[in-house]
Image (cartoon, rainbow, N blue to C red; front, side, top):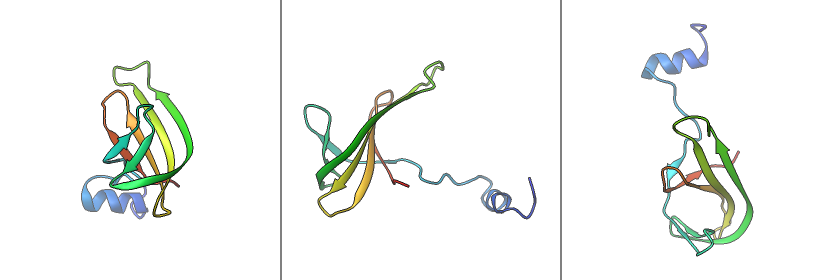
Length: 95
């Protein structure tokens, strides 16, 4: 690694590289079909898109997630996903 690079300086000062856009636990209420109706105490106004990700299925720790791109009542866009292997809901900022 180049000693003057940005990654080197971040890793050198903290001893690790920071994860950008890391998922954060979210409080999500879903309807019977599994669609979010409330995210972190904000009502979902509109479901923009839904998709599924199945990855690393050949390993002992596969990733199986159901993603939703939402518009909240406040007008904020957000992406949430349900982790089918570990359970729980998470939020992740869109690009």
